[in-house]
Image (cartoon, rainbow, N blue to C red; front, side, top):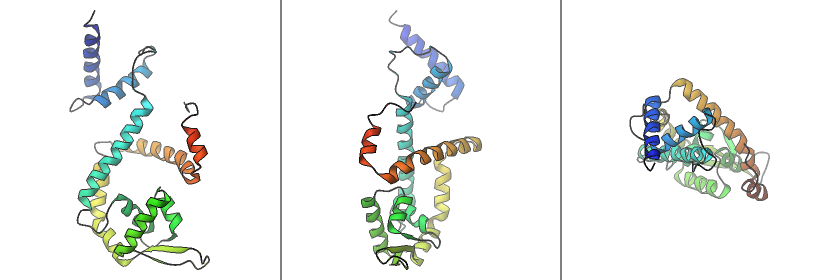
Length: 212
């Protein structure tokens, strides 16, 4: 009896390899495959089975994808005046000829105010963006990309296109379209919560019942 679990794992591993044909064993991919198999086959998992949360795996892999993008971007931007993906995002929000309030630009980049202001200070210091008084609101200033900023963006445009293609990896066009649709749906869900930044609401999110 003590070998029954091992025998079952071997069978599942063989089925996983036969169906997905991975180039190498990947624990997280195997767990995700098990979860999908469990949904397809009623009763596949017992209630007390210690199976990782599907939501947890999704969150983990989204985090991994951001880290991979950061890893590649550091190499791409090492000789550029553009310091990071956050800097690039700010410049992209202004390119080629947009003029935005600081707060609007920071929100577009999905950044918190303190972090966004640090990025803007750095870009201003480097001369990649400029600012001027708002014609209709004396309390506000408009931010716009400078000629140096445009030149920096153009110098890495080809590399950023290649980086984007590399990040989407070995996905087929149909898979990319499906993933994009799902990510846009998640973006639409989270964006208003982020923009409200209501601490009571956010704290409540971690105590309320699951959305599923």
